[in-house]
Length: 348
Image 1 (tube, rainbow, N blue to C red):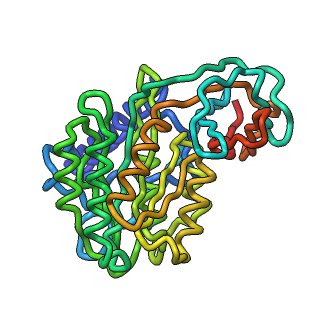
Image 2: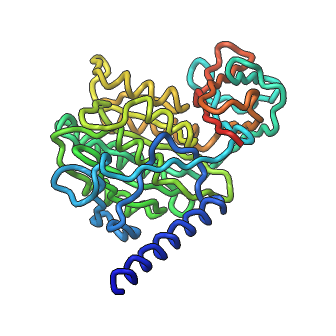
Image 3: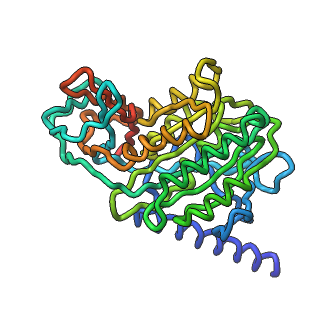
């Protein structure tokens, strides 16, 4: 009798949790199409953070959180009745172009010209939703102080209290959330200063993947720009996911990735190509800075770009499930467009 009662209680609790999840989904809580698997936060690790010292271990040896390979897998799907695309346009000197008309654009959806753009507008002074990812692995040990100085400079220059929101994640041999999304810049700064972790390996891809899937689930009622700033050497030695997985989930989540490596510009490192591709495919940028001062100048230009975006929406030209390549052209071949290079559709 006691065993029957316990089993019944477990079944009722599980059913309630599933119904709550379905209700959240139907109400629009999930605003992206995940990759083939998405991470769920371990049940014993929850709640918001009140300060940078409150660490949430996600994975890695010696930590109490689950490793990515142990986490349950889910696929969250949402139909794509229209494609939404944010992008910027700059001239050959990198200066933003702010006076484009819809007639100046040509959008190709799987090489097929889009016949009807449902919405076109220029958005300025956009609130930012920022993920700041710091590489604390052994390969970045020599550049750690510069890396943190760059991150602090970015927060002080770009994030506006009360309007923007950001989170801080560190990755090495595992992933740690040092600060959940907040508009308190002081909390973000404290998280960057305290961030550390075991670094025998580098779970770079898993960190970016996890951040895309889990950190910006809620929809904003007003237009925002969702970006991820990754400061890393681009090397990965321990992830279960690959570069293509990360690009796919970032595109599905409509997140632009801005990547920065700290080293002498005269030298080239293997991870630079990875960071470049990650930025190009998601509509962001990749930069190399030798110092925090150089990075500050870069961020000064980036802030305007992040807050000023063109926005278009259109129906897919061919509503075939799967990946669709995107291309945005402008009338002047000397102008450069920064936009993500694809989207994913599922059956309606």
